[in-house]
Image (cartoon, one colour):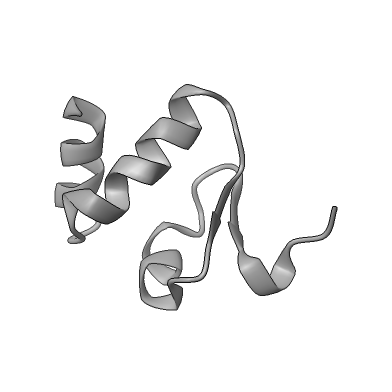
Length: 56
């Protein structure tokens, strides 16, 4: 939760959005999103992918 709040504050987003990114980062997983607005804010973080760019 603490990391989600840090991400939300840093990227001026909701904790609701940030919690999924924090979870993915903690578990070293991909973070795939359909939220273009949030994606534009966090796209430079490792393993962040917009759904249209995802390839298995």
